[in-house]
Amino acid sequence: MRGRFAIQLNVRMRWLALPVAAAVFVTGCTGASPADPTTPGATPRFSSTDAPMGTTGMPPSELSVPGLTVSQSMGDDPALQVSVRRPVAPGQAGLSSVIADWATNAESAFRGDYVANPEAPPELNVGWQVVTASGPVLGIRMETFEFGGASGQTSHRVFYGDGSDTWTGVDLIVESARAAVVARVLAAVSAQGHPTFGSGPVASSGEPGGPSAADLLTDVTLTAAGDVVVLLDQGTAAPYSSGNLSVTIPAAAAAPLLSDRGRRVAQAVRSGLPYAVSVPSSAAPTAGGPSGRPGGSTATPPAPPTPPSPVPGPVPGSGVDCGVLKCVALTFDDGPGPLTGRLLDSLVSAGAPATFFVLGQNVRIHPDVVARMVRSGMVVANHTWDHRDLKRLTLEESRSEVDRTAAEITRVTGTSTILMRPPYGSYAPQTTTLGQSIILWDVDTEDWKNRSAAVTTSRALATVRSGSIILMHDIHASTVEAVPGIVAALKARGFTLVTIPQLLGSTTPGKVYTRRTAG
Ligand SMILES: [Zn+2]
Figure 1 (cartoon, helix red, strand yellow):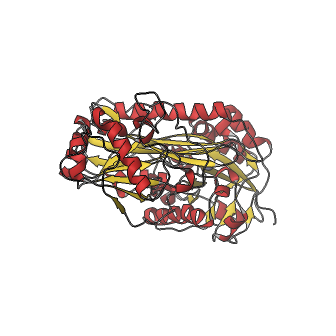
Figure 2 (figure 1 turned 90 degrees about the horizontal axis):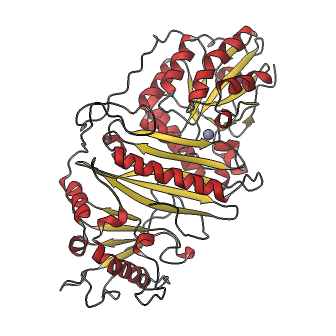
Figure 3 (figure 1 turned 60 degrees about the horizontal axis):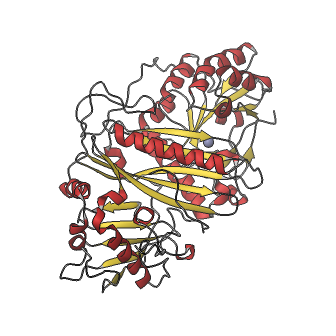
């Protein structure tokens, strides 16, 4: 459960990637030994396919996890890019905590391995996806993209919890069958025409025979039909050039392989029951801040949290002329998160409009907050779906990052935007072809780094001038704390606080803006 996976090189692989190739059914069970518990009389078939990497995108199932929040560790350092997001689920303290430990470990290992490099910034992006949410069982896939300076790699790991117990993908398979499963997974991959790393786990003789169960069976899920699906990270079963593969173990063959925990997952998935885990009324999930609703079992979709909020009055500035006034735009990236409601409270009560560059993934989690932004006179703009460095993505992948987020914003707010801020301020020439105006900044508070309301405030005020765009992040408590003082100080200096559309007027797709430059 600790550490990252031993994987080398790679080609970029993202969720957009590949259509599922026709399944190749593997017959013969070539990896099975006579004592193989996976070999009943019939001939169970493991089938191997090229796997679509659909993992970072979240399926609708995440909507059925009431009260789920996301904890984010975001370092917006353009020279050492870290974006780690993990779910925190009510009633799943154990699971949330195991994932938190794992994510913390992944981040510190990354920070230990790499130093800032403006030329080729190392990048760590950890995202998540609900793979199972049924009965009391919640399954979370963590997807890690890591770029070390020359190439990137994507890896996966699934964690499960049922409110009282926590386990990982490999634990779905009974221990005595794991070696045989590995062998047969490799055989299925081999039968599809891929060279494999050995034919099974380390042999009892001590000779290396291939990947171990712990290395290979990190991402194991169950379908409603009872099939077991093993998602193989690039470079674990076969060379990187083979891409991502998945192996399906049909239900009939899979049933005898399941552990008690595996059967628990199978039963939950087969039941088709909505997700419902008991949430102690006094307990909030660990780490990650306010987390939704206490109390009772939670089988229905969450009601929007209702932060105490001032009645949103008319926000001044809609008729402002920044050609005449001294205007400045506050912008907030990476949210919305658990703190955003509080920030909105203070902006609204100060009559200070602002612009929020949101992650599409977070809009999915906090639609109510995003809707409230618009009702309060704020502008909601695009910060991509999950905060990847757009320079490392293909045009199609970049387009997906932007378009999915734009669609989510429109779904939730009824408004649309062509204002986009690339994560880390990093973009490629192709990014300018996505129909978006690229909004950067000229005042960087570095609030992600200093985590101090005082320092954030002084940085916000030090170089601000008429037409400035100030960069902050609404996921840090210190920033939320600093904002009322920043707003008051700017007003005292005669600035009018405006949104990006008010500051820049109508913007041109493909053009890059760092501030308002002309009258
Ligand atoms: Zn960001």
